[in-house]
Amino acid sequence: MRSIKNILVTGGAGYIGSHTYVELKEAGYTPIILDNFSNASRGVIDRLNTLFQDKPMVIEGDIRDTSLVEKTLVEHQCDAVIHFAGFKAVGESMAKPLKYFEVNVGGSERLLSAMKNVGLRKIIFSSSATVYGDPQELPIPEAHPLTSASVYGQTKLMVEEMLRAVYAADREWSICILRYFNPVGAHLSGLIGEDPTGVPNNLMPFISQTAIGRREKLSVFGNDYDTPDGTGVRDYIHVVDLAKGHVAALDLMATPHCTPINLGTGNGISVIEMINAFEAASGKKVPYEIVDRRPGDIAACYADATRARELMDWNAERSIHDMCIDTWRWQSQNPDGYN
Ligand code: NAD
Ligand code: UDP
Image (tube, rainbow, N blue to C red; front, side, top):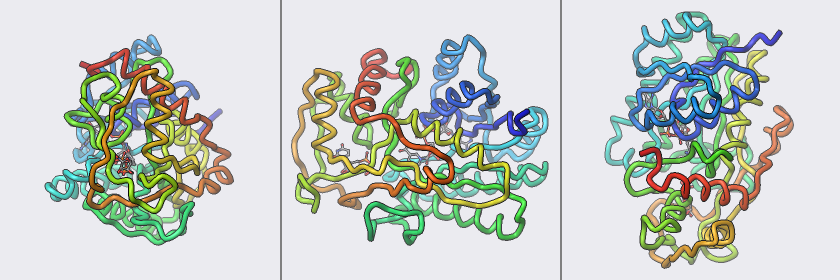
């Protein structure tokens, strides 16, 4: 019998959390969602219910509420935590730094304290490739020096440091720090996907909203980078592959360790290549114009994905075409997202 079964998924109603819920269920785990719905629609829960014909277990609450988290961990006999909850908008983090420190850093500290109080020491944490800053080498290995150009990046780095300190003090913890590259795409069913509030900051939702006619045109932020076509290069990873990476990481929870692992494909794709791929997949035109570089942007960023393969036997399998097809299915079936 598997010793790890019940998984607390903080932020489980969000974009990556909801896709991970699906993969956990399919792998035979029992996920319990803890979310305060500050950046998620309750419609997600209905969709998960539709997908499985089984009502998801959802605790509506905040990761900063230590007594609620403790009670949930005990009542549901949780064996591990996957910690997605937090805020992720880089621009907003610069304008509202305290909001980000409070929820991302303070919330993670509260969660870890609650876990410690009930004797649970297994956690998978959502970090980001942003902790590599402007990369000194490509593809980026986990040993690359860490830095942060934004408050958001700083919060990820601070939680990583917190986790390393927790492990240094108590070697019974089992900690996976997953550094995501650029998650895109949606579940094959078209029932769940990315539903940003307001104007999207990220490339893929902006492209898909332009293709469906919600936005007039895409602004391409610079074509004078030192990249093959001059536009920014990123490592886009299908959110279902990313979700499966979390299921794979649960197998590393059997023994104590604290390990950072990149989740990316290892391939760099430019903005223009992504536009072309999306047009081919959707059959829609994506009007765009080249504008100035976005402040703080880097030229290129893609993962050395060797460690994930070696430690977890995990590989990203879905292509750029899959990412575009699945995004388009979600966007065209849900032109206004969950509303
Ligand atoms: P998301 O905003 O869709 O999901 C986060 C979820 O956390 C939301 O459902 C929100 O309601 C919930 N939440 C926020 N604060 C909470 C709190 N105090 N208590 C309980 N729930 C709370 O974001 P996502 O794209 O799914 O990202 C998940 C995680 O992955 C985040 O930590 C993010 O920083 C990290 N990450 C995301 C990306 C990306 O591009 N999407 C890249 C790298 C890392
Ligand atoms: N990008 C763009 N127009 C947009 C949004 C993004 O040209 O409206 C570019 C951006 O400059 C970068 C790439 O697309 O080169 C990915 O941007 P995103 O914000 O999605 O991810 P990040 O820069 O955080 O890796």
